[in-house]
Length: 292
Image (cartoon, rainbow, N blue to C red):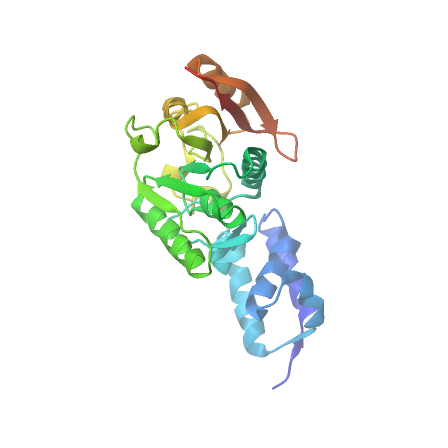
């Protein structure tokens, strides 16, 4: 069976994706090639030739990506920290920006040390990304995750089961509304760290096709100002955290000061800090619970 050179196929794919308006055409073409070949993207140079079947599969995936189907739907996975998560239609795709909250959470847990078993809560867990990445990095932690949408929760359960089978500490998954005043009531005043990547996009925002047509809208939109979920969720966070416990909530880049104002208005938080992402845009607000 004759083989074809890979590099020209990747260049052709890059041109096609660029013409389709894909934001990172070269990287996406390489990710798809690596997926088809079953190798790490950084090792593509070691596979200079591909079979006709591999080339055909690659071109089919590139054509779907050119239709703005998300890369992660085509490969079936998304990364968070040191883990890979199964994702697909019906669940929000974790974004690289959320890695900042993951790193922040690990720093908080490191500061706590190992004096007691830390308790972590992930509100609006989606695929389980933050909860499972934290449990992987800190197997001593007791991690709880809350998700309202049954379809997203099924993805979280799938990921949790897979990682537990691989040896990670199991997490506790809960179906429920993070704005419910009774959610996780048994953890009131006991939680060390609360993280959340909730629905926060303002209703009138213009989104790329990958987001608007493929991410579940329930996981995206937070009402007219993007704060419909975050606004009541601040009370839930305040109820769950112990004195000295900390929280980080991701938000739309138009809402850094708005989210900070909600924590300040609550009256039970100090050290309310707005954190930018690597592009300098407002990305998450962190705060620390003070005693009542």
